[in-house]
Length: 273
Image 1 (cartoon, rainbow, N blue to C red):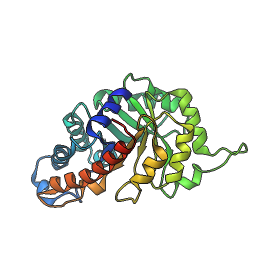
Image 2 (image 1 turned 180 degrees about the vertical axis):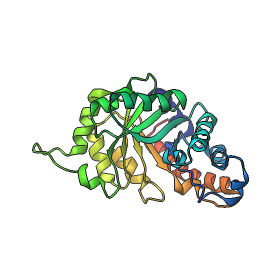
Image 3 (image 1 turned 90 degrees about the horizontal axis):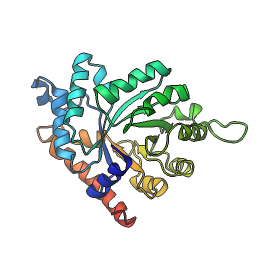
């Protein structure tokens, strides 16, 4: 999916919502365990309930690969089921030396046919550029996350006063551009979103942490907005586990609709039509 196509979807749906498919057998409604593939059945019903309200789905790969080949099969069926007009994100956080990254990229871009994959930048340029070589695909690079351990490295200052996350973003935008490179920026560091926006004015941000993790949609829009919207705001648990009975799809839809309605208000205020 191109940047222009993604922007058109945001305008058409009046939404910049990403639904995280962190599908856990222990948390899903128990009646689904009778299905041959409960993970796929859960995802299928979530997708059916929310596909007109969101512009992206983000399966967290750890929730699938822990089940071995069956988990990978569930993931493949899930990605194949997602409508073509919805942006797909493999939340895999890969990043290794060149040859290994090339095969990771082939896995998620060719075999799985995701639109994008999250990548860790710690090993530098040769661990990231193999993902950027796939036309029409995206790298979503970890930039400024909201976990406690982010303070261990990401905020560390160099002698020139720049922090590590700033150097990562500036370097990455010499490897790719806003047509194939996005950044992960945590919603619970609201002012940090503004700092990232200042040095990456044109890139889309994937923003986790709204909903169950306590991030504010209002703050995300205040600090992260750009002329293209520039935001994909993810909610996982707050949507997919909103209900825990046979009507879980309806509960997920209601939760997603609440966020989408708030996003529509933001887009209206910004005259983004």
